[in-house]
Length: 115
Length: 115
Image (tube, rainbow over all chains, first blue to last red; front, side, top):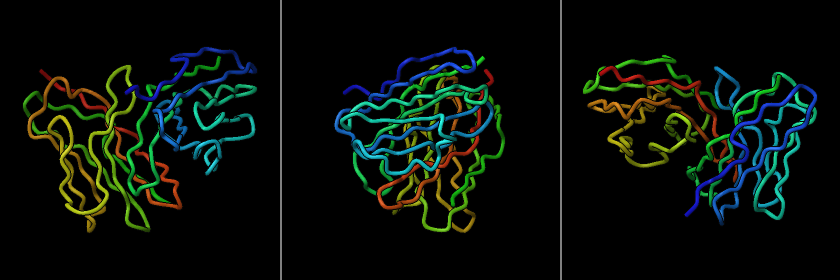
């Protein structure tokens, strides 16, 4: 069974440009989470999808960030326009059910550098 | 709200020595506790988790952790370190909140093994 995949693995863009990150969860997983780690700090929650619906987007930094999950399958996270402070590693995770303490399976992350 | 404190951003131990990585949490409701590991150039992998039941939890690669409610701790241990244990380790907490189990992470501990 394939794990969570993320694309691209690395992205270097200039301030003001747009970047779109993609996450493909494990097949059949209804829950999809986005997290971000800014250098030297903790991994922080951004948002949570259940199928195609946003369950919780309380961690999204501002309206420059837009997440979608088409048809409840893969998800994209767009940053437009990118700012220097958006640099970091963006992780995607998925889980199957709403059981208590359900394990989240993480992808390898996308390393974003905004110059 | 939940929080996690990992004491020591960097820990070095000799090969064959005891590994002890500290994690303390804060939660107003019974937490679910996790340890994840990130090897170089890879995503986060679950080492072990505590949800309910036995407070001593065994995970992969010989690691274990004990949930101590009175001390609000979930320290990770391994009796004998191997070179392959060199990685970054993250402690995380979640609570069951209407189907959203977003993880709150500590800042991570980078483990170095000295030959």
